[in-house]
Length: 312
Image 1 (cartoon, one colour):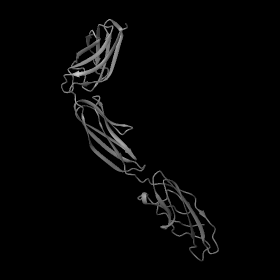
Image 2 (cartoon, helix red, strand yellow; image 1 turned 90 degrees about the vertical axis):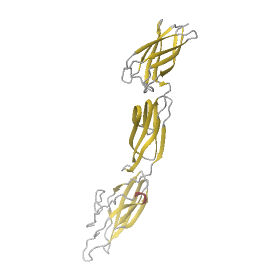
Image 3 (tube, one colour; image 1 turned 60 degrees about the vertical axis):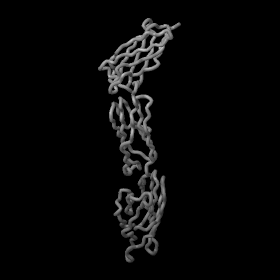
Image 4 (tube, helix red, strand yellow; image 1 turned 60 degrees about the horizontal axis):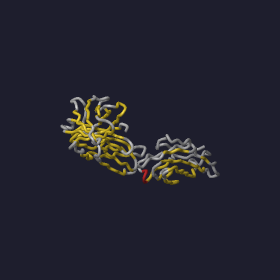
């Protein structure tokens, strides 16, 4: 029968302040009289190696309590690496790597300690600040996540604080996950953020000027294209008189036409005197700036005080 080894359990025993006095390792063996153990707790790689051994019982079970050195770095709920080798066959081995609990060890308690939703950002997101308190009677490790990213991690014993910040839109679920001791549960908090109005981007077409008629009037056509991923309603106005209206999200085209009269009856020149044209955001887009443009030469960079001058 070929030699075989298994490690079935790892437990810290007689812990004081989250530090185990010894590590109890149990397992099974076949065709092997004795198992030699090498243990290390790689809190700081590679960890100090300490050794133990166990005689295999008649039923194939074995168990060893290996005393932890004072500088081993082993902590309840922490990580441990164990290599087991049969004393009579160095090719017969098994390996364990993972977190271990201590007898009598208690899971930490977790509670949300702070939560704040900020104002809208230009991209339609809101900044969220969130924090949680982890109270651990023994050494533990925990992380705060938003379901996609890990925002913060802590480890140790006592009162620990997790704090995270991020920009979000829609629904997000924050969670504190207990990494160790194994088997402990954390908490979660799903929230739906209030929607933000995203001010649309405005792009102007070149204005179209009709010819002066016999009465000295001229038809002017102005077109603005507005685009936004969020909801908005906008009007194209001339001197605060609505010419066209549209709603998003998406891309909306507003086109306005206006007959401009001759300013001076004695002059052959048609002019548009102090006319301000631009889309005004209404409703869900309230608070977005007026985007006006002088005529001729419409430009999205022209401030709202721009006026129309000569229209030849």
